[in-house]
Amino acid sequence: MMPMFAIAFPAIDPVLVQIGPFALRWYALAYIAGIVLGWMLARRMVALAPVAATREQLDDFVTWATLGIILGGRLGYVLFYRPGYYITAPWEAAYVWQGGMSFHGGMLGVILAALWFCRRQSIPALRFGDRLAGVVPIGLGFGRLANFINGELWGRVSDAPWAMVFPTGGPEPRHPSQLYQAAMEGVLLFILLQVLVRIPAIRAREGFVTGAFLAGYAVARMVGEVFRQPDAHLGFLFAGITMGQLLSVPMLAVGAVLMLRARPA
Image (cartoon, rainbow, N blue to C red; front, side, top):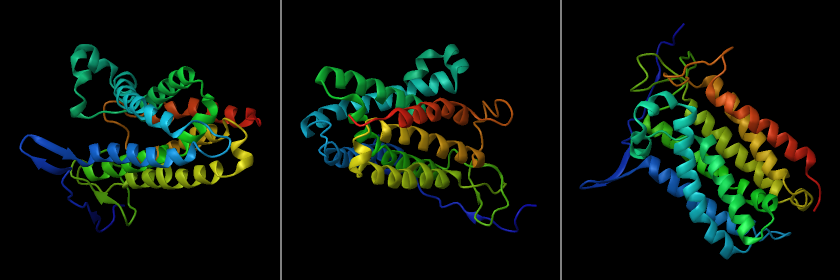
C-alpha cells in the first residue's frame, strides 16, 4: 500500500548561477568540488610514510585525473549504458552537456591515467593508488547529492515514510536512493578508507587500501541499486540484476584479490 502522504521533493534549481549564456550547474560544481577537495587532501596523503609521491607530482597528476574522469566517464556511459543509441548517432557521444556519465568508466579512465603517470614518473603505482583511493569518495558523495538536486536517478516505488515524489518520476512516492548512495559511497566509504590509510601497518601493505576502495564501493553500489530504479532504456538485465550491479562484480573480485595479496613492501 502507498503511504497517505509523501515528503515533498525540494525544488532546488539545478542551475546555481547563470550569467547570460553561461550557467554553473550543481552537477558541474560537484565535479569541481570533488576534484579540488580530493586534491587538497591527497597532498597530505601522499606525504605519509612510506612516501608515495611528492606534492608537486600530485599537482601535475590532477590534470590527468580530471581528463580520465571526464573522458572515461563519458565513454563508459556510451559503451555500458547506451551503445545502441550512439551507434546511430556517434557524434552525440561528444555532447557531454546533455548528461550521461558512468562512474565505472571514469574509474577506468583514472586508473589508466595513474598507471601511465606512475610509469613516467617512476612512482610505485599501488602505493600511489592507495593514497588516491582514500579521497575518491569525496567526489562520489558530491555527485550523488547533485543527482538528488537534479531530481534524477531516483529510487523505486516505496511506502517508506520518507519516500518522495520526484518531478520526473511519476505520481508514486519513491526511495530517495541518491541520498542512500551519497551516504554509503560517500560518507561511510570515506570514513573507512581514511581510517585504513592512517594505520602504518595498513599503509605498508601496498594495494590494500586500493582493494578496500574497490570492494567497498562495489558493495555500496550493489546495495544502493536495490533501492534505485534501473535506467528506463535498460531495465533489469537478468534475475533482477541491474547494470550497476553487474559492473560492480569485477570491482569486488579485483578488490578482494588486492587485499588478500597485499604484503608489506
